[in-house]
Amino acid sequence: MVPKAAKNRVHLDLASTSPEHQAALVERALGLGARRRDLGQGDVPWVVLADPEGNEFCVLEPRAVYAGSGAVAAIVVDSGEPARLAGFWSVLVGWPVYSAEEVIVGLRAPSGRGPRLEFLRSAEDKVGKNRLHLDVAPAAGEDHAAAVAQVIAAGAVRADIGQGDTPWAVLADPEGNEFCVLTPR
Image (cartoon, rainbow, N blue to C red; front, side):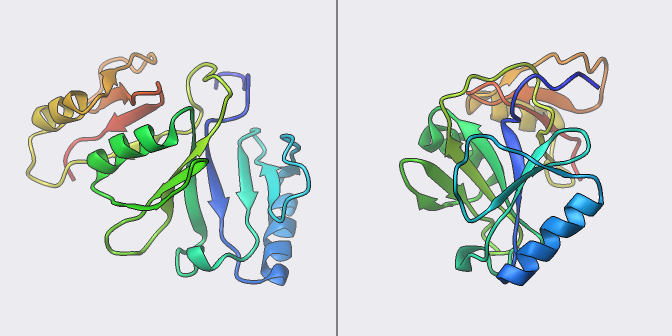
């Protein structure tokens, strides 16, 4: 594993259903080896932790918007231009924008289930390969090469992160975040 050089550009937000549930999730994570992390967030109602390998994640206070999302409320991607990056990912995954603010833009699966994909404004530059990344998969029966070509036409570029010869394609979004286009499933 490559040593961690900076805050992750991609992290998970965990959902809670009550203040007691949030506290229990924090205590459970700490018991599993997580540690509290200060990223300069100040006095906020969520708790920032890092897993044993240093990957940050947040345990959110109860929020109605995440009710029914399951354990993971959101996959959050730091972005210089959240609206632009959300537009790329919306086309890529077929999820509409459900919330658009200057600081954060969120996508939601049409089914209304599962975590959201959110793009959070950040002035920090990308440092090295992302330690966490997204994988997307064409539907069963789709042509993998054609799917990769469509993603490139939408603004992605091929990325070499030392993956060697793989059946999936490693690409980067318009802000350089690596992701994989898996074989059809």
